[in-house]
Length: 143
View 1 (tube, one colour):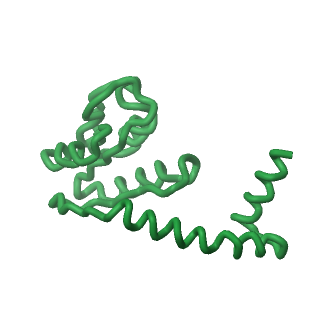
View 2 (view 1 turned 90 degrees about the vertical axis):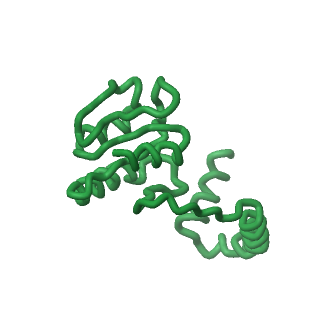
């Protein structure tokens, strides 16, 4: 029964049929209310960090191609000596760690995480992992 419910809502989100539309219209006011609450709860605070930034991400957690896209962008802009900043998901270390500098690997995969190491191995970009992205971007500015 549980899988049928999940399947119903998944179909409603990705390929709605005629019988999904009453539910969609029923939930529409709640969507607008949710959007308004999020707008005022999380105000946009932009800070100029002094360097061009390309942010690769979305609401899908895994399997949407963010890492290959990041590798391709870093390789396309290699003449600008790019720096890739990640949180370092799955690593066994904490804090800010420089994984590679212009293609020269500095740490092992346990300290960097597998995604950061993959980017470091497939590009000549500098790769930095840190839980605090702002701190990592300031470190990238030094490179």
